[in-house]
Image (cartoon, rainbow, N blue to C red; front, top):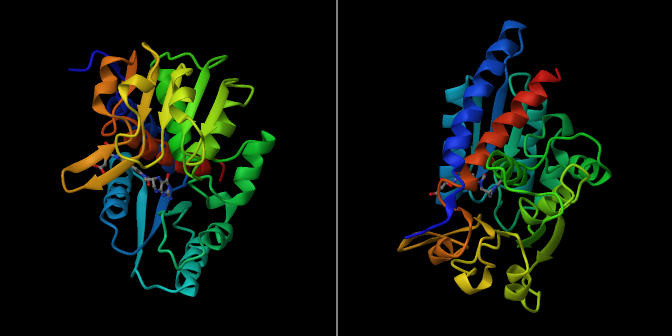
Amino acid sequence: MTTATLLDGKAAAADIKNELALRVEALKERGVHPGLGTILVGDDPGSRSYVGGKHRDCAQVGIASIRVELPADASQADVEAAVLRLNADPACTGFIVQLPLPAHIDTHAVLELIDPVKDADGLHPTNLGRLVLGIPAPLPCTPRGIIDLLRRNRVEITGQQFCVIGCGVTVGRPLGLMLTRATEHATVTLCHEATQDTAAHAREADVVVAAAGVAHLVRPDWIKPGATVLSVGLTRTVEGVLGDVHPDVGDVAGSFAPPIGGVGPMTRAMLLTNVVEAAERI
Ligand SMILES: Nc1nc2c(c(=O)[nH]1)N[C@@H](CN(C=O)c1ccc(C(=O)N[C@@H](CCC(=O)O)C(=O)O)cc1)CN2
């Protein structure tokens, strides 16, 4: 039985979607019709379910959906052609390529082909470069969702010690960049698979973000009592979907974002936010 305060991403995302629905209405009144495109390559059940969720969200806030699906054996040229089609499609005001792509596809080459203006994930090199330089740009959805969830729950960020576990391109690496901007001013330790003692770094932290994709990696004895813990990475097993954080951490942490209903819905809400913001710039 967890004693930590729940960081409820589902509830926060519902509030964000209500606000976005009003902004979408205002856009339509001035003739701008936002449309989110998604490119899904292959049959990974997790990716399919996330893309399905993104389109359900679009319907809820009045954003049009353009769904592109390619088989797992699609070639590099097929995927790049799909990107170029969405770049040119006026009905698509923003789009994403669902990650991970199959191993034979050069992901960087695909992401680099996206028109940076339509980059709803903030993962184009131009937009990541703008983030590094502190120039306004669409921000990667999960890190943006994590910071928004902390702020809505009045979790202190400025001056706090963060331990981010995992340095992938969708979460850990951009989160480190965002948390150290002047608007956040946190101190961040970014741990990865070659870190010698991740548990020791986590024990020092006021906020632990687990985005490694290793089931139940973070144990209760890794956590300073009262710290804030966000379980981001998910692993699908025969027993179900497991988070990076062991559920017993909820007995030690002060606040806890669970693997389901925590950061995931915020990721989706921030994608919609990026789409609406891009449409508002048209
Ligand atoms: N192009 C991108 N690909 C991926 C991203 C991304 O930001 N852009 N992030 C992740 C997956 N992801 C978004 O696509 C994502 C993960 C989880 C959820 C979510 O709503 N989770 C649910 C639980 C779902 C489940 O049971 O599996 C929840 O937390 O309640 C949404 C989006 C990798 N790829």
